[in-house]
Length: 349
Image 1 (tube, rainbow, N blue to C red):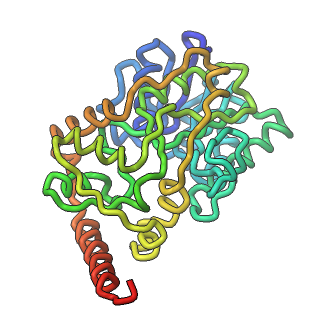
Image 2 (image 1 turned 180 degrees about the vertical axis):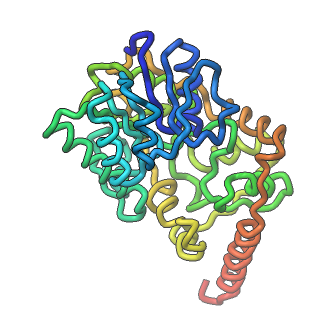
């Protein structure tokens, strides 16, 4: 377990996952530093040191850090190998542990077994984002094997917080337009038949597992997945969202490969759906629980989503319209209904 009073640097620190870690570490009295652009400075707890800089400006980062050394450096915004190589230059000799946030989407799609462990093959033919994460992991593990670099890899799945309701099919502006459709009684597009299993993890639960790996000798040179043990079908997920809004959800099922084919390429439904959310997975977190005794995610999704909905409805700035996505949903539904009508009228049916 982590020992009190560690000096920890988080690269990021105000995002969906890292904000909860920041709050918990600050409350526990650690010497916490955040390195980011300072766009959410008002959300940072008192006593946390902020290094406001572009991390790609290595000279400026080194100037601000001086000769400070850390017990752990946690990288939340490293997406491609070049960013990990930059971190190696910056922190190779100034941290006892480097924690890299990868992604559970890196696991093979489709996996040979729906039960996923840290030993499941990493390979995602559908999503470049996931392949980049795999490349970053491989680089870091090579540094560990060849040079003793003290890396720990963490693979989150779908982690959420009060800023956004986790849905599967949405546009580039987030989930609000899906909620708007529910409020308006419009059909909501769900991939497949909605029966595939998915895991959603409240960020405060994730943070407890993550913090248990900091300063933990069992974590060096290892990968861990951190998520809830609760599995729900997508139909159940949307039903929970509807209950939180006191609305019935008119779920409208559309094949995942069709959605990926007809959505704008920049929405990357091929990666998000075929390479991730349309695949049934059940994560086995036994390895994490051995390294962090007592860890258990305790927030059921129906509880967490009620907090999300209440927060979003109370904060109009989070209610970002996405009219392009809304119109696209209407067109997809109309096209499928036309096809259904045409086939029902076919005498061969």
